Structures are given as structure tokens and as C-alpha cells.
Image 1 (cartoon, rainbow, N blue to C red):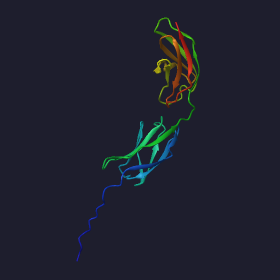
Image 2: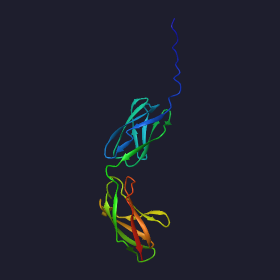
Image 3: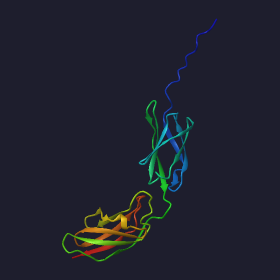
Image 4: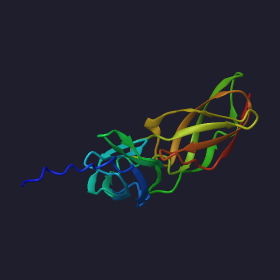
Length: 200
């Protein structure tokens, strides 16, 4: 006598979790294979490295994924998580750090200093000198004016076409006073601060 086939209830899928990312510190000038350990991975799993990258993962098992982090996308610190499509689920996030291949910028001088403006408020052209100004492959640096009285930080206009790794032109508009000038590079790292005096 033939018995009817046995029905097996597989139950709900394993929870989608992320417990380890290795390595979690990645040089930005290399393509790196990253291994993710967790639970609930399947053929639909995709790896998200926010805010810049979405990648198709290689499924090793339901507890292991591998993905190549392309150096083009590795611009700053990020978080990584996994998404499954069927059913749609999202794992927890883990931190991932990107290590720039060069040191942060250094600001050595701002000229003229003091800068003289004809009116209040007024304009002044500034020349910044230092190192590491133009290192990022995709993102221009930003020059900030720090006002210690108001506690504000305002970006200054600049001419990216005249910029080199050691030279930059920026444009001040404001009132007389003493300010701090800093430069933030494409990896969101700040230089040291140089004091600027503005007079009438």
C-alpha cells in the first residue's frame, strides 16, 4: 500500500540579522572583498553600504555573504545592512569605516591677514596655503569661516579651477572681526584652524 506524501511545514524564515562585518575598516584606494556574518541570508540578499553604495552579494550560505566594496564608492564612514526581497526584510546596521589613503589637509596661512574690506559688510579675496587641499577623487574641499562670537560656521565661496594641492582662493563677505578659517576635505576631515582678522 502506497502512503501519501508527507507534508513538511518549513515554518517562518530565520530572522535577518547581521552580527559581523570583516574587515570593517577599509582603505579607500583599494577594492576590498568584505565578509558579512549573520542569519537569514538567501539568493535575494543585497548589501547596502550607506550613504553611497548598493551591491549584489555572493551567497556563501544562509549565514555568510561576500561583497566587493569598490574604491569608487568608499568616501566616508558608513553603515552596512542586508535586505532580502521575498519576503522584504531589512537587517540591523553595523558600522563600517573607510580609511583615506592620504593624511588630512593642513592649513598654514591665509593672506592677506588682516584682510581689509571697503564697506561693512564687505568683500575680500583670500589666498589659502597649505597641503592636502585637492586629494579627493570626486569631491572638492569646502572652506569654512568660523565666527567665535555667534558660534556659527559658514562656507566661503571659492574658485575650484585655480585650486592645487597647496593653494586655493576663497572669497570673504561679512563684517570686521576675528574669525577662524578651516578647510574640510572630501572625506569630511577638517584641517587645523587659522585665525583671520578683518578690518575696515
